[in-house]
Amino acid sequence: MITEKAPGKLYIAGEYAVVENGYPAILVALDQFVTCTITESAREVGQIISKQYTNDQLSWRRMGDRMVVDKRDNPFSYILSAIHVTEEYARSFERHLRIYDMHIDSQLDSASGRKYGLGSSAAVTVATVKALCHFYHLPVNKDQIFKLAAIAHFAVQGNGSLGDVAASVYGGWISYHSFDRQWLAQQRQYLDLKTLVDLPWPDLKIEPLVAPEDLELLIGWTGKPASTSQLVDKISLFKARQQDEYHRFLEDSKACIQRMVEGFHQQDLEVIKHEIRYNRDLLKRLGTRSGVNIETPVLNRLCQIAEKFGGAAKTSGAGGGDCGIVAIDRHANFHGVLKSWAKEKIEQLPLSVHFIDDIKYSVQQRLPL
Ligand code: PMV
Ligand code: MG
Image 1 (cartoon, rainbow, N blue to C red):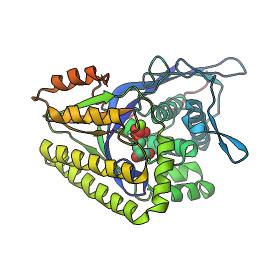
Image 2 (image 1 turned 180 degrees about the vertical axis):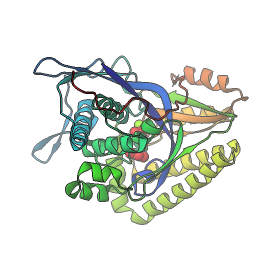
Image 3 (image 1 turned 90 degrees about the horizontal axis):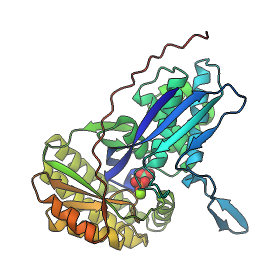
Image 4 (image 1 turned 90 degrees about the vertical axis):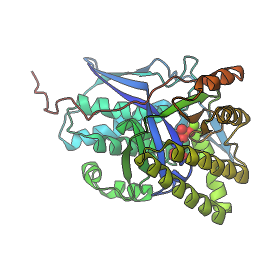
Protein backbone atom coordinates (compact mmCIF):
# COMPACT_ATOMS: atom_id res chain seq x y z
CA MET A 1 0.00 0.00 0.00
CA ILE A 2 1.35 3.40 -0.95
CA THR A 3 0.18 6.76 0.37
CA GLU A 4 1.18 10.22 -0.82
CA LYS A 5 -0.32 13.59 0.01
CA ALA A 6 -0.34 17.05 -1.54
CA PRO A 7 -1.24 20.33 0.18
CA GLY A 8 -3.77 22.95 -0.74
CA LYS A 9 -2.73 26.51 -1.51
CA LEU A 10 -3.79 30.11 -1.54
CA TYR A 11 -2.85 32.94 -3.84
CA ILE A 12 -1.29 35.87 -2.03
CA ALA A 13 -1.07 38.19 -5.06
CA GLY A 14 -0.79 38.34 -8.84
CA GLU A 15 -4.05 36.57 -9.72
CA TYR A 16 -5.41 36.77 -13.27
CA ALA A 17 -2.20 38.38 -14.59
CA VAL A 18 -0.38 35.11 -13.86
CA VAL A 19 -2.61 33.40 -16.41
CA GLU A 20 -0.49 35.12 -19.11
CA ASN A 21 2.86 33.54 -20.01
CA GLY A 22 5.75 34.81 -17.93
CA TYR A 23 3.64 36.90 -15.52
CA PRO A 24 4.27 36.32 -11.81
CA ALA A 25 2.21 35.55 -8.73
CA ILE A 26 2.96 34.74 -5.09
CA LEU A 27 1.40 31.69 -3.47
CA VAL A 28 1.58 29.74 -0.26
CA ALA A 29 1.00 26.03 0.48
CA LEU A 30 -1.17 25.20 3.50
CA ASP A 31 -1.40 22.24 5.85
CA GLN A 32 -4.64 20.86 4.53
CA PHE A 33 -4.20 17.90 2.19
CA VAL A 34 -5.48 15.57 -0.45
CA THR A 35 -4.23 12.03 0.17
CA CYS A 36 -3.96 9.34 -2.48
CA THR A 37 -3.57 5.70 -1.47
CA ILE A 38 -2.84 2.93 -3.97
CA THR A 39 -3.26 -0.77 -3.26
CA GLU A 40 -2.43 -3.35 -5.87
CA SER A 41 -5.51 -5.31 -6.86
CA ALA A 42 -5.63 -9.06 -7.31
CA ARG A 43 -8.77 -8.70 -9.38
CA GLU A 44 -9.29 -7.69 -12.98
CA VAL A 45 -10.99 -4.43 -12.12
CA GLY A 46 -9.52 -1.53 -10.23
CA GLN A 47 -11.56 1.09 -8.41
CA ILE A 48 -11.16 4.77 -7.75
CA ILE A 49 -12.94 5.64 -4.54
CA SER A 50 -13.32 8.97 -2.82
CA LYS A 51 -14.98 9.84 0.46
CA GLN A 52 -15.77 13.40 -0.54
CA TYR A 53 -16.40 13.20 -4.27
CA THR A 54 -19.65 11.53 -4.99
CA ASN A 55 -20.00 11.34 -8.71
CA ASP A 56 -23.77 11.54 -8.66
CA GLN A 57 -24.04 14.98 -10.14
CA LEU A 58 -23.07 16.49 -13.48
CA SER A 59 -23.19 20.18 -14.39
CA TRP A 60 -23.89 21.22 -17.95
CA ARG A 61 -24.76 24.29 -19.93
CA ARG A 62 -26.33 25.09 -23.28
CA MET A 63 -24.10 26.21 -26.15
CA GLY A 64 -26.44 26.78 -29.06
CA ASP A 65 -28.22 23.48 -29.53
CA ARG A 66 -25.54 21.48 -27.80
CA MET A 67 -25.54 20.34 -24.21
CA VAL A 68 -21.98 20.82 -22.95
CA VAL A 69 -20.74 19.12 -19.79
CA ASP A 70 -18.10 21.11 -17.95
CA LYS A 71 -15.62 18.50 -16.76
CA ARG A 72 -13.33 21.13 -15.24
CA ASP A 73 -15.16 21.16 -11.91
CA ASN A 74 -15.26 17.37 -11.61
CA PRO A 75 -12.37 16.01 -9.47
CA PHE A 76 -12.46 12.65 -11.25
CA SER A 77 -11.38 14.36 -14.50
CA TYR A 78 -8.15 15.46 -12.78
CA ILE A 79 -7.55 12.04 -11.21
CA LEU A 80 -8.01 10.25 -14.55
CA SER A 81 -5.80 12.74 -16.38
CA ALA A 82 -3.07 12.37 -13.72
CA ILE A 83 -3.23 8.57 -14.06
CA HIS A 84 -3.07 8.78 -17.85
CA VAL A 85 -0.02 11.08 -17.85
CA THR A 86 1.90 9.30 -15.08
CA GLU A 87 1.33 5.87 -16.60
CA GLU A 88 2.55 7.19 -19.95
CA TYR A 89 5.66 8.37 -18.09
CA ALA A 90 6.00 4.97 -16.35
CA ARG A 91 5.90 3.27 -19.75
CA SER A 92 8.88 5.36 -20.89
CA PHE A 93 10.79 3.74 -17.99
CA GLU A 94 9.60 0.36 -19.22
CA ARG A 95 7.41 -0.25 -16.21
CA HIS A 96 4.75 -2.91 -16.49
CA LEU A 97 1.37 -1.27 -15.82
CA ARG A 98 -0.67 -2.88 -13.07
CA ILE A 99 -4.22 -2.98 -11.72
CA TYR A 100 -4.87 -1.17 -8.45
CA ASP A 101 -7.45 0.44 -6.24
CA MET A 102 -7.03 4.13 -5.55
CA HIS A 103 -8.53 5.87 -2.52
CA ILE A 104 -8.71 9.64 -2.49
CA ASP A 105 -9.29 11.52 0.74
CA SER A 106 -9.61 15.29 0.56
CA GLN A 107 -9.46 17.71 3.48
CA LEU A 108 -9.88 20.52 0.97
CA ASP A 109 -13.55 19.90 0.47
CA SER A 110 -15.81 20.49 3.47
CA ALA A 111 -17.93 17.67 4.88
CA SER A 112 -20.97 18.96 3.03
CA GLY A 113 -19.08 18.64 -0.26
CA ARG A 114 -18.39 22.37 -0.58
CA LYS A 115 -14.93 23.43 -1.61
CA TYR A 116 -12.93 26.04 0.30
CA GLY A 117 -11.10 27.29 -2.78
CA LEU A 118 -7.78 25.92 -1.54
CA GLY A 119 -6.85 24.37 -4.86
CA SER A 120 -8.44 20.95 -4.52
CA SER A 121 -8.15 20.13 -8.23
CA ALA A 122 -4.42 20.96 -8.23
CA ALA A 123 -3.80 19.02 -5.00
CA VAL A 124 -5.70 15.95 -6.18
CA THR A 125 -3.67 15.98 -9.41
CA VAL A 126 -0.37 16.30 -7.54
CA ALA A 127 -1.27 13.63 -4.96
CA THR A 128 -2.23 11.18 -7.73
CA VAL A 129 0.97 11.83 -9.71
CA LYS A 130 3.12 11.43 -6.57
CA ALA A 131 1.39 8.22 -5.48
CA LEU A 132 1.75 6.66 -8.93
CA CYS A 133 5.42 7.71 -9.27
CA HIS A 134 5.97 5.99 -5.93
CA PHE A 135 3.93 2.93 -6.94
CA TYR A 136 5.94 2.50 -10.15
CA HIS A 137 9.26 3.47 -8.49
CA LEU A 138 9.94 6.30 -10.92
CA PRO A 139 13.01 8.46 -10.31
CA VAL A 140 11.39 11.88 -9.95
CA ASN A 141 12.17 15.13 -8.17
CA LYS A 142 9.90 18.13 -7.54
CA ASP A 143 10.57 19.62 -10.99
CA GLN A 144 9.46 16.44 -12.73
CA ILE A 145 6.41 16.00 -10.50
CA PHE A 146 5.44 19.60 -11.22
CA LYS A 147 5.70 19.07 -14.97
CA LEU A 148 3.72 15.81 -14.96
CA ALA A 149 0.99 17.30 -12.77
CA ALA A 150 0.94 20.51 -14.83
CA ILE A 151 0.48 18.53 -18.07
CA ALA A 152 -2.33 16.48 -16.48
CA HIS A 153 -4.08 19.52 -14.98
CA PHE A 154 -3.74 21.63 -18.13
CA ALA A 155 -5.28 18.83 -20.22
CA VAL A 156 -8.48 19.21 -18.17
CA GLN A 157 -8.75 22.87 -17.21
CA GLY A 158 -6.98 24.44 -20.16
CA ASN A 159 -7.12 28.06 -18.99
CA GLY A 160 -5.23 28.10 -15.70
CA SER A 161 -1.77 29.39 -14.82
CA LEU A 162 -0.82 26.15 -12.96
CA GLY A 163 0.43 28.28 -10.05
CA ASP A 164 -1.73 26.15 -7.73
CA VAL A 165 0.03 23.00 -8.97
CA ALA A 166 3.43 24.62 -8.28
CA ALA A 167 2.42 25.58 -4.72
CA SER A 168 1.18 22.05 -4.08
CA VAL A 169 4.43 20.49 -5.34
CA TYR A 170 7.06 22.86 -3.91
CA GLY A 171 5.33 23.88 -0.65
CA GLY A 172 6.08 26.96 1.50
CA TRP A 173 5.92 30.45 0.00
CA ILE A 174 6.81 30.71 -3.69
CA SER A 175 6.89 33.20 -6.50
CA TYR A 176 5.69 31.57 -9.71
CA HIS A 177 6.00 32.72 -13.33
CA SER A 178 3.69 30.78 -15.63
CA PHE A 179 5.18 28.90 -18.57
CA ASP A 180 4.21 29.14 -22.23
CA ARG A 181 1.26 26.74 -22.42
CA GLN A 182 0.85 27.11 -26.18
CA TRP A 183 4.40 25.84 -26.53
CA LEU A 184 3.56 22.92 -24.23
CA ALA A 185 0.43 22.01 -26.19
CA GLN A 186 2.43 21.98 -29.44
CA GLN A 187 5.38 20.04 -28.07
CA ARG A 188 3.07 17.49 -26.49
CA GLN A 189 2.10 16.43 -30.01
CA TYR A 190 5.66 15.89 -31.22
CA LEU A 191 7.82 14.95 -28.24
CA ASP A 192 7.65 11.90 -26.05
CA LEU A 193 6.72 12.66 -22.47
CA LYS A 194 10.13 11.95 -20.96
CA THR A 195 11.90 14.31 -23.38
CA LEU A 196 9.28 16.98 -22.69
CA VAL A 197 9.63 16.65 -18.93
CA ASP A 198 13.43 16.89 -19.13
CA LEU A 199 13.40 20.07 -21.24
CA PRO A 200 13.48 23.52 -19.64
CA TRP A 201 10.03 25.05 -20.21
CA PRO A 202 9.90 28.58 -21.69
CA ASP A 203 9.10 31.32 -19.14
CA LEU A 204 8.68 28.89 -16.22
CA LYS A 205 10.27 30.24 -13.04
CA ILE A 206 9.60 29.08 -9.49
CA GLU A 207 11.44 30.67 -6.58
CA PRO A 208 11.01 29.73 -2.90
CA LEU A 209 10.48 32.78 -0.67
CA VAL A 210 11.13 33.27 3.03
CA ALA A 211 8.42 35.19 4.89
CA PRO A 212 9.47 37.79 7.49
CA GLU A 213 9.27 36.59 11.12
CA ASP A 214 6.58 39.11 12.04
CA LEU A 215 4.21 38.17 9.22
CA GLU A 216 1.00 36.47 10.40
CA LEU A 217 -1.24 35.15 7.63
CA LEU A 218 -4.98 35.13 8.32
CA ILE A 219 -7.43 33.33 6.09
CA GLY A 220 -11.12 34.15 5.99
CA TRP A 221 -13.62 31.87 4.26
CA THR A 222 -16.80 33.37 2.84
CA GLY A 223 -18.61 30.03 2.84
CA LYS A 224 -19.47 30.54 -0.81
CA PRO A 225 -17.67 28.43 -3.41
CA ALA A 226 -16.61 30.03 -6.70
CA SER A 227 -15.69 28.46 -10.03
CA THR A 228 -12.22 29.65 -11.04
CA SER A 229 -12.45 28.37 -14.60
CA GLN A 230 -15.70 30.21 -15.26
CA LEU A 231 -14.36 33.47 -13.79
CA VAL A 232 -11.20 33.19 -15.89
CA ASP A 233 -13.37 32.60 -19.00
CA LYS A 234 -15.14 35.90 -18.29
CA ILE A 235 -11.87 37.83 -17.91
CA SER A 236 -10.81 36.41 -21.30
CA LEU A 237 -13.74 38.27 -22.85
CA PHE A 238 -12.53 41.50 -21.23
CA LYS A 239 -9.03 40.79 -22.60
CA ALA A 240 -10.44 40.62 -26.13
CA ARG A 241 -12.64 43.70 -25.81
CA GLN A 242 -10.40 46.05 -23.81
CA GLN A 243 -6.92 45.12 -24.93
CA ASP A 244 -5.10 48.29 -23.87
CA GLU A 245 -6.61 48.33 -20.43
CA TYR A 246 -5.94 44.64 -20.00
CA HIS A 247 -2.27 45.12 -20.86
CA ARG A 248 -1.99 48.00 -18.43
CA PHE A 249 -3.39 45.69 -15.74
CA LEU A 250 -0.79 43.03 -16.62
CA GLU A 251 2.13 45.44 -16.39
CA ASP A 252 0.89 47.01 -13.12
CA SER A 253 0.42 43.56 -11.58
CA LYS A 254 3.89 42.42 -12.67
CA ALA A 255 5.57 45.50 -11.20
CA CYS A 256 3.59 45.04 -7.97
CA ILE A 257 4.68 41.40 -7.61
CA GLN A 258 8.31 42.30 -8.32
CA ARG A 259 8.23 44.87 -5.52
CA MET A 260 6.53 42.39 -3.21
CA VAL A 261 9.17 39.73 -3.91
CA GLU A 262 11.79 42.36 -3.08
CA GLY A 263 9.89 42.89 0.21
CA PHE A 264 10.33 39.16 0.94
CA HIS A 265 14.04 39.35 0.09
CA GLN A 266 14.43 42.34 2.44
CA GLN A 267 12.19 40.65 5.10
CA ASP A 268 10.15 43.87 5.11
CA LEU A 269 6.53 43.30 6.21
CA GLU A 270 5.53 46.90 5.46
CA VAL A 271 6.53 46.59 1.80
CA ILE A 272 4.62 43.32 1.50
CA LYS A 273 1.51 44.85 3.10
CA HIS A 274 1.72 47.91 0.87
CA GLU A 275 1.81 45.76 -2.25
CA ILE A 276 -1.03 43.51 -1.06
CA ARG A 277 -3.21 46.63 -0.80
CA TYR A 278 -2.09 47.83 -4.21
CA ASN A 279 -2.78 44.40 -5.75
CA ARG A 280 -6.26 44.45 -4.20
CA ASP A 281 -6.94 47.79 -5.90
CA LEU A 282 -5.75 46.43 -9.25
CA LEU A 283 -8.04 43.39 -8.94
CA LYS A 284 -10.98 45.53 -7.82
CA ARG A 285 -10.54 47.74 -10.86
CA LEU A 286 -10.26 44.71 -13.14
CA GLY A 287 -13.50 43.40 -11.65
CA THR A 288 -15.37 46.68 -12.07
CA ARG A 289 -14.15 47.26 -15.61
CA SER A 290 -14.88 43.70 -16.76
CA GLY A 291 -18.16 43.29 -14.91
CA VAL A 292 -16.77 40.23 -13.11
CA ASN A 293 -17.69 40.10 -9.42
CA ILE A 294 -14.18 39.48 -8.03
CA GLU A 295 -14.50 41.28 -4.70
CA THR A 296 -17.99 40.29 -3.58
CA PRO A 297 -19.72 42.21 -0.74
CA VAL A 298 -18.66 39.54 1.80
CA LEU A 299 -15.04 39.67 0.61
CA ASN A 300 -15.23 43.45 0.81
CA ARG A 301 -16.37 43.24 4.45
CA LEU A 302 -13.65 40.71 5.18
CA CYS A 303 -11.03 43.17 3.88
CA GLN A 304 -12.56 46.22 5.58
CA ILE A 305 -12.52 44.51 8.99
CA ALA A 306 -8.91 43.37 8.59
CA GLU A 307 -7.84 46.87 7.53
CA LYS A 308 -9.51 48.35 10.63
CA PHE A 309 -7.12 46.30 12.77
CA GLY A 310 -4.04 47.21 10.75
CA GLY A 311 -3.92 44.21 8.42
CA ALA A 312 -3.42 44.34 4.66
CA ALA A 313 -6.17 42.32 3.01
CA LYS A 314 -7.36 41.22 -0.39
CA THR A 315 -9.34 38.58 -2.20
CA SER A 316 -7.39 35.40 -2.83
CA GLY A 317 -7.43 33.59 -6.17
CA ALA A 318 -10.20 34.26 -8.63
CA GLY A 319 -12.47 35.79 -5.97
CA GLY A 320 -16.23 35.68 -6.42
CA GLY A 321 -16.39 33.84 -3.06
CA ASP A 322 -13.91 31.36 -1.56
CA CYS A 323 -11.28 33.05 0.64
CA GLY A 324 -9.66 36.35 1.43
CA ILE A 325 -6.17 36.71 2.92
CA VAL A 326 -4.68 39.14 5.40
CA ALA A 327 -1.06 39.93 6.16
CA ILE A 328 -0.79 41.37 9.66
CA ASP A 329 1.95 41.95 12.23
CA ARG A 330 2.17 38.97 14.58
CA HIS A 331 2.09 41.40 17.53
CA ALA A 332 -1.01 43.29 16.36
CA ASN A 333 -4.52 42.61 17.65
CA PHE A 334 -5.46 39.98 15.11
CA HIS A 335 -7.93 38.36 17.51
CA GLY A 336 -10.04 41.49 16.99
CA VAL A 337 -10.18 40.65 13.29
CA LEU A 338 -11.35 37.12 14.00
CA LYS A 339 -14.08 38.27 16.41
CA SER A 340 -15.48 40.80 13.93
CA TRP A 341 -15.31 38.25 11.13
CA ALA A 342 -17.32 35.78 13.20
CA LYS A 343 -20.07 38.40 13.66
CA GLU A 344 -20.33 38.65 9.87
CA LYS A 345 -20.32 34.85 9.46
CA ILE A 346 -16.85 34.90 7.97
CA GLU A 347 -15.07 31.78 9.13
CA GLN A 348 -11.37 31.84 9.89
CA LEU A 349 -9.51 28.84 8.45
CA PRO A 350 -6.84 28.19 11.09
CA LEU A 351 -4.20 26.81 8.73
CA SER A 352 -0.41 27.04 8.72
CA VAL A 353 2.13 27.24 5.94
CA HIS A 354 3.26 23.78 4.85
CA PHE A 355 6.84 23.08 3.76
CA ILE A 356 7.85 20.05 1.67
CA ASP A 357 11.11 18.11 1.63
CA ASP A 358 12.32 16.47 -1.53
CA ILE A 359 11.12 13.01 -2.50
CA LYS A 360 12.23 10.33 -0.06
CA TYR A 361 11.13 6.93 -1.33
CA SER A 362 13.53 4.52 -2.98
CA VAL A 363 13.42 4.57 -6.77
CA GLN A 364 14.85 1.10 -7.26
CA GLN A 365 12.31 -0.94 -9.14
CA ARG A 366 10.97 -3.72 -7.00
CA LEU A 367 11.80 -7.10 -8.47
CA PRO A 368 8.88 -9.47 -8.83
CA LEU A 369 8.97 -12.16 -6.15
O1 PMV B 1 -9.46 30.89 -7.12
P1 PMV B 1 -8.18 30.14 -7.22
O2 PMV B 1 -7.54 29.96 -5.88
O3 PMV B 1 -8.35 28.86 -7.99
O4 PMV B 1 -7.15 31.02 -8.03
C1 PMV B 1 -7.29 31.40 -9.36
C2 PMV B 1 -6.19 32.34 -9.78
C3 PMV B 1 -6.26 32.85 -11.22
O5 PMV B 1 -5.08 33.62 -11.43
C4 PMV B 1 -7.46 33.76 -11.41
C5 PMV B 1 -6.33 31.72 -12.23
C6 PMV B 1 -5.05 30.91 -12.36
O6 PMV B 1 -5.13 29.79 -12.90
O7 PMV B 1 -3.97 31.38 -11.98
MG1 MG C 1 -11.05 30.56 -5.88
